Amino acid sequence: MTSTPPPSGPSSLDPEIAARLKRSADGLVPAIAQQYDTGEVLMLGWMDDEALHRTLTTGRCTYWSRSRGEYWVKGDTSGHFQWVKSVALDCDADTVLVRVDQVGAACHTGERTCFDADVLLKDAVTDASPGQ
Amino acid sequence: MTSTPPPSGPSSLDPEIAARLKRSADGLVPAIAQQYDTGEVLMLGWMDDEALHRTLTTGRCTYWSRSRGEYWVKGDTSGHFQWVKSVALDCDADTVLVRVDQVGAACHTGERTCFDADVLLKDAVTDASPGQ
Image (tube, rainbow over all chains, first blue to last red):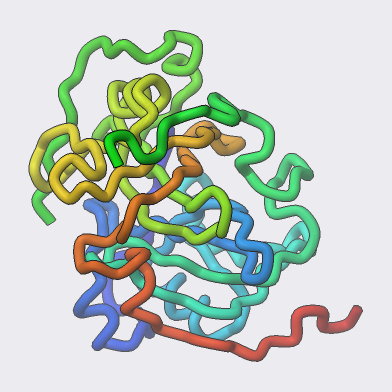
């Protein structure tokens, strides 16, 4: 996969957040977009500091596109915006969870979520409490 | 962040799936764990082919720990297993979504999810449909 890293150097992100954020070697963190009311996991994108800053301040979910090597406001071309409801870091500060209100389809294929079409395992029956 | 890549070489993963899977440079894909009934996003871990194979076949969510450099069956030390209900790839085959039944807390801090404690933005009021 061709992957273009984001620009290095300072961003507009709150320095307190930037100091805590743990990025991968390419300067990015995975960002999970979840529909705020239904709980659907819509997609996973990647953010650098600047994309996180824009997501926190513009109300629209903004990613770094590794394939195109540019910032990407979800919906700018499709109209399928993700309106930001809340943003959280995980316990290691290396993953972002953005709860959004998704306009239309989240997936470029037209599916509601990016995880609808390629199911590897379904309705697994496991004993959820062995020995309990 | 110190990050140890998984072993290279063949795994037991179904070759048809392995042929489609798009891994990052370190041979991993991000894996989102979601509580199957409530929709809570619990955590994000990392899987290589073998971890995905074990997740698909053992009923327990298995990750590659980048910090410890070993396979990690969620719950083996804490008892907080993730019993696998379904597994899906996203449209680019570079992210896994595992719906699980989480025993107890997903987060090592004792929080139910890894995204509960570090909220950057809450209850944002955005106009979800400007111009519509």
